[in-house]
Image 1 (cartoon, one colour):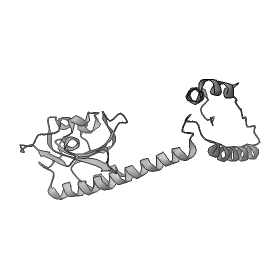
Image 2 (cartoon, rainbow, N blue to C red; image 1 turned 90 degrees about the vertical axis):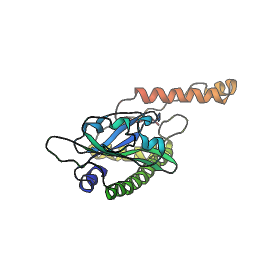
Image 3 (cartoon, one colour; image 1 turned 180 degrees about the horizontal axis):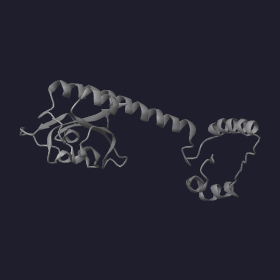
Image 4 (cartoon, rainbow, N blue to C red; image 1 turned 60 degrees about the vertical axis):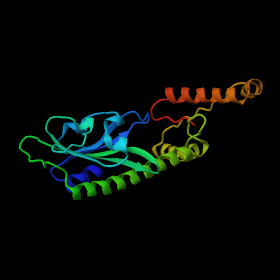
Length: 218
């Protein structure tokens, strides 16, 4: 959605949205528009002045401002980076680039109205992305067991009801395997709850690694 809208909002400019990795040590391209090869790279947060300063960073070729290292390439005439920040969390950046490509005439700098428009877009994008991530976390909490990572009983009932209906309609069989850990209560009583939790986590990891695609572990 962002890339589709940005092509119309910023004619003559390339751009990209970069997301912060889970480890917070890399930014990776998530969506891009235009032609600049600058927008295909992976780089460190330290390579972007917008992230280091926590605000918009604009550079053009006649400016004395330091240019972002991730935008250092021959032919780059101007760059604009805006951090994506929502709910106190830095999610990534939006980057706009003006560079020379074939016979296209790129602007020497990114105009103030374009910068203001990009700022509004970055703010909306950050809020939307934060809401999506929150919804995903809530969905995981509603359907997954927090200890083992397996689907919970509630999801099992929903899944079984759907799969049983499909099996009856298509006249095919449906297999269900139920597992029980032998002497688990005795093990738990003897070694303590932490050890019992470790056993359950290991079993959960094992099931998720070795079940077939299309099967479900709960």
